Image (cartoon, rainbow, N blue to C red; front, side):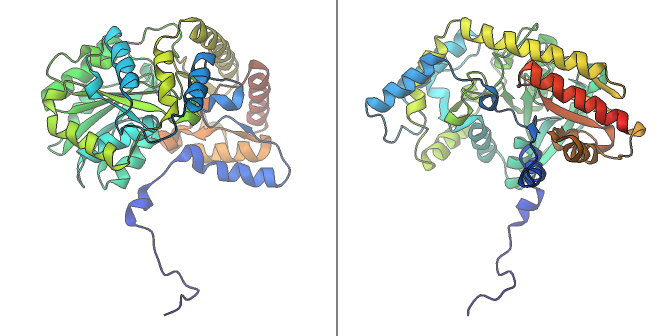
Length: 404
């Protein structure tokens, strides 16, 4: 029977709950660009768009790998030298792991997907921070599992409440997700807060995913790897990548490291089985991993110096605008600012973001895309552009708010 004009196929139900605000909101910006208007994008954390590049040592190692003919399939869990280099560096930072417990993935995103796919059955629950990175929500929805949000409190430095987390644990809870430094708030957790996560996982026999893809982009705080506090009785998966720490997002090279794998032998085997099923890890960028692990501090000192200046400009200018307040992030390159919606015609954060885009061609992301309440008026701002661009953006933002 020939196809009619009416839809024949319908998407799976799981896609109805699949949201990714960072990308979805770009559709509105593209429409403005089609009208000939120039949009300033502060919605996505792609450092390459703003003049950052990976270290030369990593680029050279990648090029050399291509020239030497390393263009075939990689071992599915990664080449030996790469996983050895990762495990050696991890142990120096206090993360108990081994090369055998390290898997190279297509970016940190695939690492998160491998863990969740290996662990979750339909109806299982995952504790995720709110606000938090929407990738986890998307993966959990795809698996017909359930995301349970634990609140990060903006009035207390975006810290979690351990009692709130424990109240939400049920017999179906399998995983506790921690993002440190946090995306979207930029907060870096203290040893005390990290220990609270460990204690909760220990009491309730939860596996912890700790997403630490910004751990080298830290300002005045000290980043402590969560797995370094795990002892010998809490299973932890540490996720890392070249994307943000080394400014190479397009290389799609990440990894996961298991701490206390003897506690999860069957799950570890499931990780490897899924890695085998997708055939191989990304090949040539793996040859830059040892160079990354051996890099001296000069590169990151320069990067952090620039980011600190842009952060300070952001905090100073935003907090000087009537109707806006923001925190002081200690890591990554994001800030969560709060708009006093009661003083505007808007009832949700997304309404504000879309009107600002229409009037000033500035694109932020509404906080509810990361799990805050829409009526609370939070927006996430990427402060990767130079200070001249940021000063112009915040001046126009102030003009827009004054017009309201």
